[in-house]
Figure 1: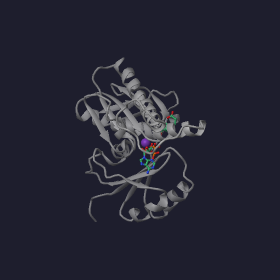
Figure 2: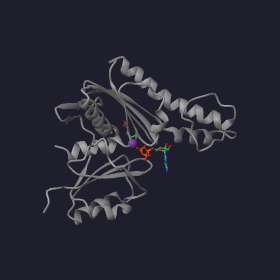
Figure 3: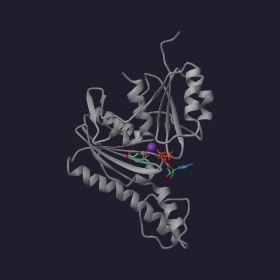
Figure 4: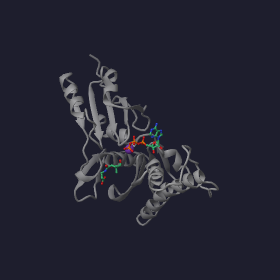
Length: 252
Ligand SMILES: Nc1ncnc2c1ncn2[C@@H]1O[C@H](COP(=O)(O)OP(=O)(O)OP(=O)(O)O)[C@@H](O)[C@H]1O
Ligand SMILES: CC(C)(CO)[C@@H](O)C(=O)NCCC(=O)O
Ligand SMILES: [K+]
């Protein structure tokens, strides 16, 4: 038997499932992220792994059946949970929630990744933003979570507009820079982008109450719409939740 152990990491988000196969040598910054519509699609991948670690912010219909299936195949399953405090290498990340289990595990894992990437460049403060179905921002200062924001993501903002008005319509495309619109879709696209960018800018202001210097980690399916946010150092990661799973379960 070879000593290499392969792990399947799964992020069950609000809209879609993301996964990556890693081993103990994989750098959590450079994961090859895949998308699946449901857990049944992972059958083939399972044949090549010895462990599964997963994080879920929802209960897909077949999650317990999937876990039972893994058990019957003798594959250990590790289910991530938000912690009050978690060790990351030589530091500890501390949660600000009075009831940590109420915090989405995706936010916690993204923060784990944020602290890990920050420490690699000897930075102790990090603002983590995950732009997906929802957009979340979390401020971490000296490894202490100071708090965060949860707001609707870009698609949700647009859908909310369409659903609650009769004459507002839009297009799929979103601009990458904000400018004043001169027809309805332009106004919608720019307005929703302004809300998303504004959320991150407000989080930066909150961070600045604590620290001038910090890493800005931007993650999630809509990360490309946050290209105008200025910060040095700034880092883009496709999926910080999977990075957090890798750091939590596969490393050490
Ligand atoms: N094929 C697609 N389906 C859905 N969203 C997509 C797609 N391609 C790009 N996106 C963008 O990605 C965003 C969703 O981000 P992401 O994939 O990170 O979230 P998610 O799967 O819903 O999980 P999470 O719970 O982490 O938000 C949407 O707002 C949308 O703009
Ligand atoms: C905010 C979302 C939806 C982001 O995916 C998720 O982290 C979640 O369901 N959180 C639970 C509420 C909280 O984090 O306080
Ligand atoms: K996410």
